[in-house]
Length: 404
Image (cartoon, rainbow, N blue to C red; front, side, top):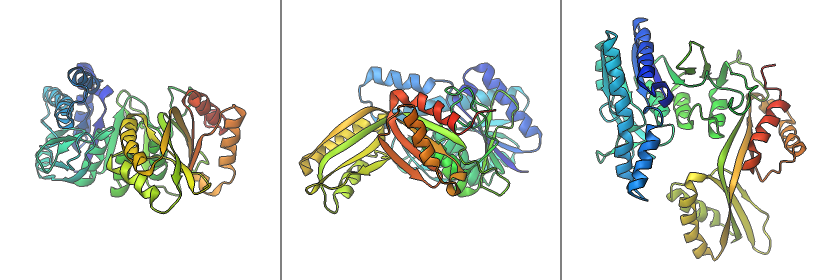
C-alpha cells in the first residue's frame, strides 16, 4: 500500500470541530487503502500565545526553554487528533518529533533536520495505524528538544515523505492552493493548477507564505510531488512538481511580496579584498540571513555596501555590524520601513523585456526602486513598505494575471 503524508496547519486544527474534520479526512484517506501519516501544527495561534507568556516572564527567554515551551503546542494537537480518530473507529498513534525519530542540529529555534529514523513510523504504518507526528520539532545530539523555525511543520512533512518514500505529500491550509498573488491583497488573484519546484522555490523565497522554502527544497531533492489544498473543501488545489512539457510556462506566474524588510548600508568601507568576506562572515556567524546585496562603485579607496534582512533578524544584524564597524572604522545606516515585490515565472527565461515592463509599471505608479535582484525566473525590487500593496496590484494587472 502506498504512503500518503498530509500536513495540517494551525487554522485546520484551531478548535475541536476542526480537529474532528481533519480526523474524518484522515480516516477517509485510510479507508481508500493508503497508509497515512499526518504532520500537525499547533492549534490556531497557540504558539503566539506561548511566546507572549514567555516574554511576560523574561525579556530574553533562553532559547532552549523556548523550544521546550513551543514544542508543546503540536503535541496537544496530535494527541487530540488521535482521540478523534479513535472515536471514528480507526487506530491512531500520536508521536512527538523525538518519538518519530527526527534528529536535528543543536541550534535552538532554528534547527535543521539531519536524519530521520523511520523504524517506529514504519512499524506503526505497517500495523494499520494512522500515524500523527507533531510538526516543527525534533531532538538534538544533546537530547534536547529543538524546533525548526518558521514553517517547520511543512519541512517536517516533506522530510518524512522523503524518508518513507511516500507517494505524495499534501499540505492542507486555509486557502485553496497557490495563487497568482496574495488573495487577501488582490481580489482578482487566481489559483494556479500547477507550478514547478523552481517557480515555487522563488515564490517561497520572495514572500509566498503558503509553502515554506525549506519544505520545497526537500520536495525537489526527493522528487516528492506536493499538493497544496484547503482543509475546508474538496478542491484539488495546486500541484507542485518537476517542470514538464505539459505545464504551462507563463511569462509571469505570480506576484509575491514581503513587508518585513530592513535595509542596512555600510558607509565608506575600505575597497580591498576580504572586506566583504569579513562583513558577511560575521553576519553568518550571527545566523542572520542576508537577502539582496549591492556594492557601489569605489571612490577614493572606499565603497558603500547595502543589503537587506528581515525585520526579526535586524537586532542580531546590528550587533554583528557594531563589532565590524569598530574594526573597520566605519558606520552604517538603517532603513527599516522597507518591503519587497517580486515577479516570478518560468517563461521569463526566454522572454525579453519582462524586467523593463516591471520597472515601467512601478515608475508609472510613482514607486521608487531602492534595490534590484534577479534570477533566470525572478525579478525582485526593494521599495518603501507603504507602497507594497499598490505595487502588487499594479504589477498583477500589468501582467494580466487576474481571472479574466
